[in-house]
Length: 363
Image: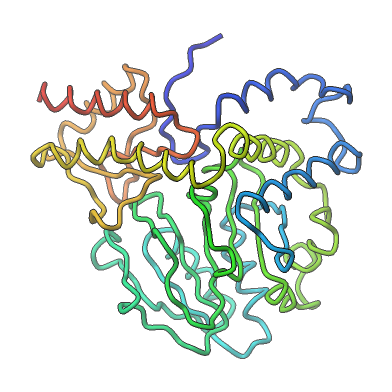
């Protein structure tokens, strides 16, 4: 078997090794079933149990109460950029506020503007999204239908450590790139959504958790496949769901519960991993220069440039020769981006930190 490298890709991203091993072991024939998870019907008892366990695991991990629904959709976060305003804005006679702290938040707001009155309660574009607002920086409408924010921006590497204060206005969050990385006070949110391929599974499934109150806003006039309420009524089986992707999310949530011990322990591990890289950046004397302001740094996506930009290509090439792959930063920020999601082992982060120190010494 080909030796595995350390995969620092921002997504589709690294998955837990025990999950991959279980998928590999049972891929041809699921125990007691006799067929593969790639070919099994979504109407069979096996998949009924997969849906039930996956939802149950998510409820345990996030403390989701009975007044919230858990949906498994398709289309990624990009489709949610449209579904959120279509379901939550139409018919309210209100507008919505967007807290824009990076490229994904900007795209979410642009899509929402097709549906109604959308305003930026904050926009960090002027500083190339290198920081986050305080609650005092937010210009919020107390009558808004909802407030939307992106908890972690993968491109710029900024991340909210907590929730912005929105009063009685429902809080909606794109948690795609830090889903399940820490405990969430789910009752602070009206709706969260996450495409799985960053931190929870493979591409193909999007998890939506929403309150019953917001679910009631979905209009019967919406197209069938864009209506949250219809998905809830059909228990996510409105059409053929991404069976294999949901199956892997089930295995990832098992890993978080049984191998890691829950989200509080996962959060502690994530902070330790991120500190390894930020310590190298901060002690480099300016050789490495972080993009995000220190108080706003992401635990998931560590973004930085080299003082001599001409050496960045060599950095990426030499890192790859060491088995450290997919470190090139996004073109809008440049430099380097190390995505260290839940499943990135500490050994991989330590190997990157060691390489960073040796590269600085050589240059």
